[in-house]
Image 1 (cartoon, each protein chain N blue to C red):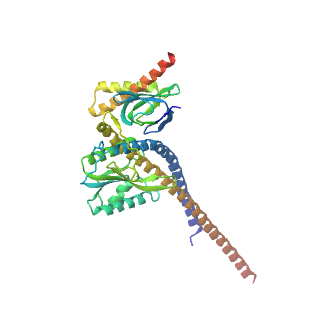
Image 2 (image 1 turned 180 degrees about the vertical axis):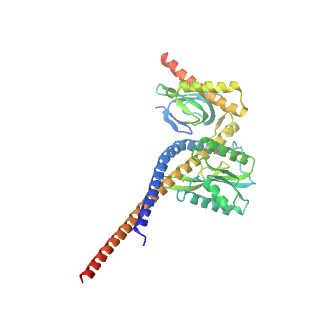
Image 3 (image 1 turned 120 degrees about the horizontal axis):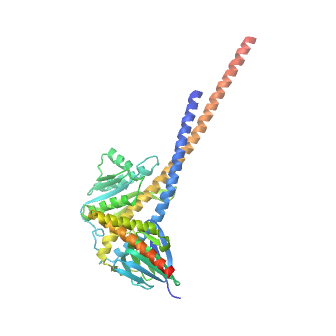
Length: 289
Length: 140
């Protein structure tokens, strides 16, 4: 049985932890609101550019661009978006499990090259002695379009040089403040955007101005970067939501623990008092007899 | 009743506008063009400039910073890099941006950056010309 002093110390330290987790929850929720707003404002543009590309890609005779065509040879590239910081429950673990799964599934064929974003992912692959092709970390705090541009350009260049057969993104999608979902999204080649669903009934014949190749040359890289930008924003919002939830749970369990230990401490104190009284009564009776 | 066009303007930052209009004039990469309902499907690159639309005799002007437009018989979707309504333009900021771009050009910089500077100069000029056009119309 721990002494009353030990219990008191314990209550104090749990209270301190609770304070920290509560503060982290507040910070995460404030940041989440901002990230969510940014994400919601990006979605219409991303949706629209996808529609246009879809329409264009349905005119097969026009569709000739390195990013539209399938590379027969080469390895697959897997872009994994993880966070820099932990304390966000299963956010990274679930994602890396999924990424690891597709890594195993495809390692038999021609192999996979990894592009890892975020400190947590880099650490994970290092622990498993897997060397990623490219690593980026430490940018989540000041995430901007520049990062999407950087990563996108690298992917576009390597794909155009026929280094890869296909490029897949793995990231956490922000569904709501309570739900994040790990998604795998094929990024390159740009085709079959509806994932095998029915094609639009109206096959439009488009006029292009200035010309189809010029439009493609501008629009496709922009689409790729936009997709990455959106994935980054989704991932950031999902990370903050996961952290908010994790810290909320931690604060709750700290509260429970404090209640438990307080009860224990009160019991111990009461036991002490009872013991002293019975000792007094016992010795008093001994004197009387 | 005449059929209308649905004009939608979106930028990477936000959804700007979604509205029924009668006519749109876009700053195409190869010259301005007008769009009326029933236009043939078209995808066009846009350069920084003035985008106008008309709805019941009221004409509204936006300054857009380049982008793309997908035009169909009943809709115009504009994917702009930036877009501001004429009366939202910060003239002072646009002027400063222009001066800065011009100064950078004079100083002479590497080719890579030149492109970016040129784009920002064109955007600033587009904003200024739109603001100017609106002011002239009001006074005249």
